[in-house]
Image 1: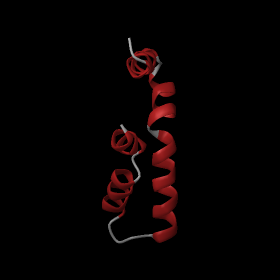
Image 2 (image 1 turned 135 degrees about the vertical axis):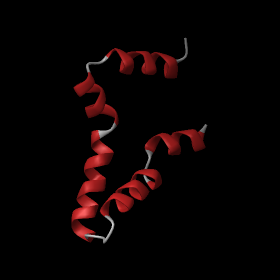
Image 3 (image 1 turned 45 degrees about the vertical axis):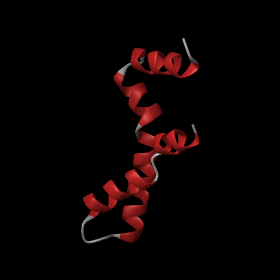
Image 4 (image 1 turned 30 degrees about the vertical axis):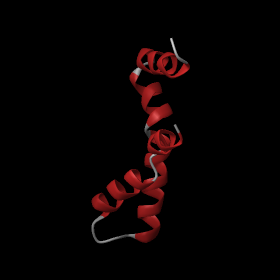
Amino acid sequence: MSSEEEKMKQLQALPIRNYLDQTVVPLLLQAMTEVAKVRPPNPIEFIANFLLQNNPEKAQTRQQ
């Protein structure tokens, strides 16, 4: 089993809160901090774009 498969298996075994804390919350907090600073007219669209542009999984895919 590759290390990536092992990591995926470990993430899937986590309780929901731990899974979210490790995978979603860090980037979501960054997005929410930016939306609070910028205060755009459409904050949901701003957050969506921020998440897409700053997705660390996307960066890892490009490197492989």
